[in-house]
Length: 81
Image 1 (cartoon, helix red, strand yellow):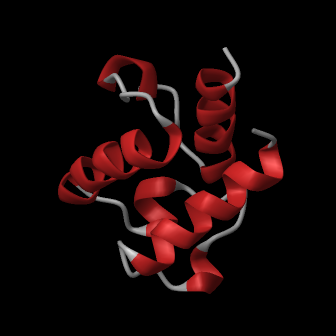
Image 2 (tube, helix red, strand yellow):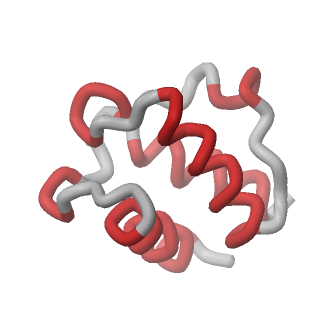
């Protein structure tokens, strides 16, 4: 799966499942501060990522993920491993 496909899937679930405003979704957007992802949203993201990308997020692996671009890179690395 390529980066564009990953970005599209993430954008779709952020808008549809987490009701994030589309204008808040850009690569340098910080997950907590800009996008508004909180701990409850993160639980949903874990389930959605497993369903859409076929792997489980490990919390310790997400420690360095601060922006959407970081999140895309994390998914890309896991999917293409």
